[in-house]
Length: 206
DNA sequence: CTTCAGATGCTCT
DNA sequence: GAGCATCTGAAGA
Image (cartoon, rainbow, N blue to C red; front, side, top):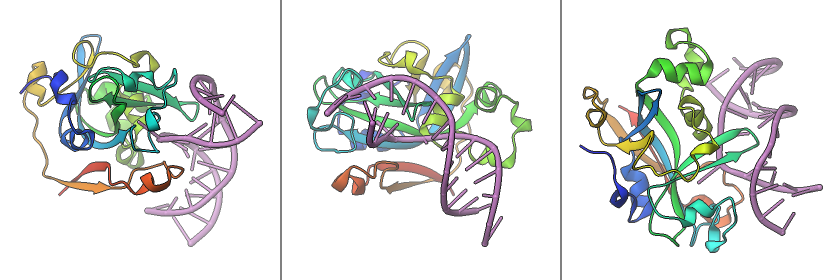
């Protein structure tokens, strides 16, 4: 029971990626905590991974946060209109991170639905319900995370991770029974042998 | 339910 | 100038 501290982000990035499943992402807006369970992640490891922005330790202005200390955010714009949130892992110099790909709202669903679709949850279509926060761009849209969050410290401030809603003063949430799945990452067809790395992790109910 | 084209702007060569 | 760790709405099955 605690907000995840710097140490959590140090270690095997693939393992951290799997460990992040079931943790809670908290985004505080105007004093209101929006709380979501993490249901899908992907690991990116710059030293050996052609899918990683920092493959072969190649450093550019954009990917500089990957080379920085762990427990910071790496947010970038993709396809000209969507933001992707990553959690930087491992000590400075090792460019590694975990991409956030899926969330399940736990508290603040009202505000999240408004940011995501501009309507209240009860006005959402079945299609919108199914595609609520099941993608990196959708997660950022729902939690109002833009590029101003690039390089922010995830252990202080209004965006952080924790192990339970209790950590932000909310009641414990009922957790459905999940099974953990492992597979290839999405949208990296250019990455040669790295397309087959089983570095995507997700939870399914049941 | 599925596939598919188009949107859009920043980053690196 | 090319390409991108994506999403949406429209159209078809």
